Length: 179
Image (cartoon, rainbow, N blue to C red; front, side, top):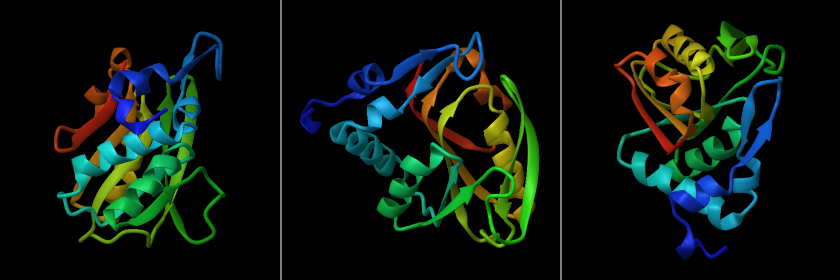
């Protein structure tokens, strides 16, 4: 697809719904069908870059694992560092952890305790906002480190699950697509 033909509706229509994944009753929004198209991938990165380019971002945090995809590309474009938040046991040095509830269970994430400093301006990126459990855990980790300026971003937001309502109003939240 030619990037000149790409817009929000084309990106939305390129995302596949997977029924009953990872559990019965869940309709999973699969972004891999969108980002495999170079024009769609470029459009998404460019849109996010344009939104954040003047905000002084020094670190982009990507939440495992799909948050690594656009998060790292966005960090590159913003000339910022990239910091992964991962599931337990995946990071090799000292970490801090936070547990949280998902729409279909519980989980824990962690970050290297020396990944950020309190003078960083951070952008937390994940592929999708559903109930907000993962991103709330990520903001808790960032706050534990002492970061005071944090933005939050998603490629996709599922409005009907009201995850945005769980986030503290002090955070500016931007989602490229909303369903």
